[in-house]
Length: 359
Image (tube, rainbow, N blue to C red):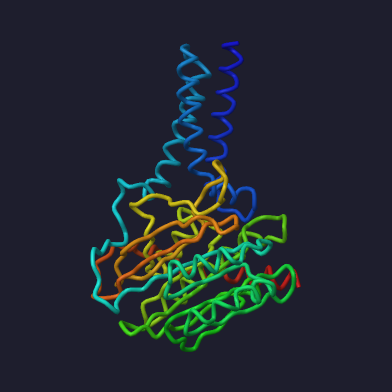
């Protein structure tokens, strides 16, 4: 029995180490890119299996190599995940108080197209009273179901899905839009909101993103399309003359290489850094939990509060972020690396070529 357990824990350790090694490969293969998601689970699995394996196996030999492989993998996972725990240095500074009129509350939710709990979504919006409310993965049904919310916000705009495999998006605001539009980067199947918000404290540039996940099933796009959408938003933020907020369901974890590259390019702050992963997906699951829904912003605004709200029937939980827009708050951005911009342009070019090849 003991030998069987040794073999079991040794095999699991090697599998988790192999998954860690594969996750470091920068290739556009959906299974490899998917391994970026469960890093927390892989790290926890390595801790458990290593402890049990070492405790059961006391003789050197092949077991030493397995142990070293497991420790190396655990070290790599810890390196990637380190910023997303409370001991790390925060990127976005906390603000304890804010002058009236300088606050901004953003609420982001992926309602899941097949979800029919529209009353829960409306109640949540009215309870939390956001200044900006971004609703993703909507349809013609959701467009009609949320029509009552237009009376709760001074301004709203939306795009309905062009076909069943496409997603829509709704953006509600208490402040006027300026030059607001929905784009389809690289002719993707999900829209990006790009608009200015005329906040009385300072003008803002808002980008709402929702690329499809890098899966081969359920109509998903290759990871190139997801990466290109996120990087396109970062490039728009970099070129903007106003403080830019990028919010939505990224379908990527914040520790993903592309997400980190986007933060460097756009000078974006991640409130999860130094505070914890704050998982927003998958609602109702105890295992498949990772942070996909994000609100990022450029230096200037300070963080008053961030909350992951209870599910409203979707597989994603809503994310609420409260900001103080003035005065400018010191923040720790990630410096741009050599080649970041060139690699971003290469990714966008690859996405355009891929979309053209697919017709």
